[in-house]
Length: 274
Image 1 (tube, one colour):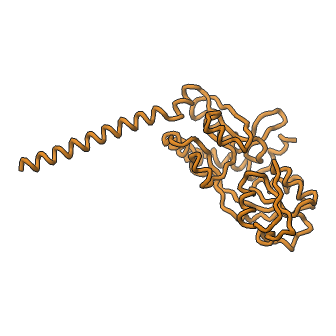
Image 2: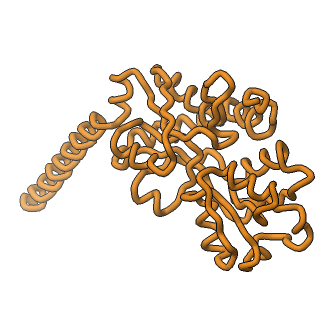
Image 3: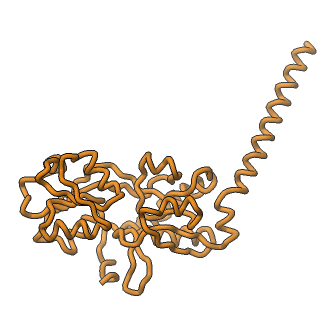
C-alpha cells in the first residue's frame, strides 16, 4: 500500500514538474514573439511589392493602396501601432523578411510547400488561381490550358511566380517567355507577340477589362488552386495565433467583406491610378 502511495505521489510530482517546466518554456517563448518587438517599436512594418493589382499599387499621389494595404492598416490599428509600408523587390522579399527588414509579408503571396520551408503562413485570406489571357486570333482554337501544351504557342508570365511554375509543370511543351513584371507579360499578348498570359485571375481580369477588350479573350476559369496568405518568420506561434484570430475578426465584423467588395468586385479604384 505504502509502495503504491509512494509511486502515485512520485508520478504526481513528476507531472507537476513537467507542467511547470513547460509553462516556464511557454512564457519564455511568448517573450520572444515578434509581437513584443512590434509593440515596443510602435510600428508594424509590412513588406510587399507595389504593382500587383488589386492587392498593392501606387496611386497618383504616391500612396500605397489596395486590398493588402487596407488589411495592413487595419492590422496596425488593431495592434495600436503605426502602419509602415516597405516596398520590396519580389525576388528578395523572403530573404528581407528573414533578415528582419520588416515584420510580415502582405503581398499577395501564394502558399507553396517550397516557401513554407522558409516562412510560416497564416490561414489563407483569399483563394485565387491561374487563369489565361489569350490573344484573340486563337479564340476557339485554345479553350483551356491543355490546348497550349504545344511548342508553337508562346506563353508568358512573370518570372519567379506561381504563374511561371504552373506553365512549367502543367504545360511544359509550350514555349515559355518570362518577364520582370506581369504587366509586361500581358502586353506581349495584347500586342500579338505571344499567344497567352498565365497569371493570377484577379490581375488578368483587370488587365482584360482595362486594355485587353477586342484584342484578347479572358479564359476566366482558374485551373489551379492557390490560397494567398500572410507570411512571417518561423518559430513564432503567438504571432501566428494573433494573425489567424485577426482574420476571423475581420471576416466576422464585416470589414473583410467591405474590402473585398472595394478591390475585387469593383473597378472604381482604377481612377486613382490614372
